[in-house]
Image (cartoon, rainbow, N blue to C red; front, side):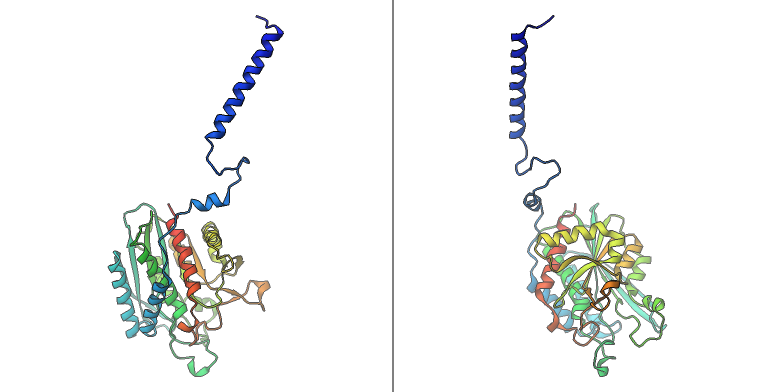
Length: 351
């Protein structure tokens, strides 16, 4: 059948009106805050989707840090080391953790037997998605970088290098009692990380590197049940004054997507000047062995660009690193708080 001109015109008008009505209906039911351009995201809408963790209390974290320092240097086989280990276990148990200990002896840089006591505290062990957070709880046995030679064979407080990371982990354990994240959380306190060869050692570089991170080296051979662990975050020297957290190269190589995501959380929280999106050289730290065990891990570690060797990716750990000045006076509570908030945000936004 052939339509005449009026019939065709009326049909076209009806179709156009119908299409306009359909467009109006679709627009009304679009999610609010979306833009018209496909793939464009509203930053404020994205931020609103974040799960906000309970408040990270920096006073509480500082108290955890100071308690560790009050035990004295936490050098394996010392009284302070033993008492601090018992305290960490008691604190975690009081907050509902299931505790596993790894007690063994390994070979020190001098070739002698040295003890290792790794402490593994777990919450939500049965959850199918888990996160592993780690720090070392021992402190350096000698201040071998101290400018005063009289101090170079004395043990240090390790307020930043050791106690700061543990303090953040314990505060995260505390806030989990207020509100459990969707994922299970394993806190691993590695022992005997900081007892490696001193500056005056004659060991070659490759051999000397193997004398560090003895606790995590042992753990990597005999890890706890990590099959459901999605990623790991190591905290090392996370409370020092004038800290700077660059994107450490070993972390980027092993879990660059995790590091980028965590650094994005830091930027959203306003800590972009602290968590700098600048890739810098890799280091031997506990995260190396976490990755070797199969947990894709990053290191949040204070690594400051060294202007003398910037072109070669050089860095330093701050003037008080492995000196008697690694004490509470050189801790910045705001840095400790920033790291705690960033890590807590990452944990509570992991599905």
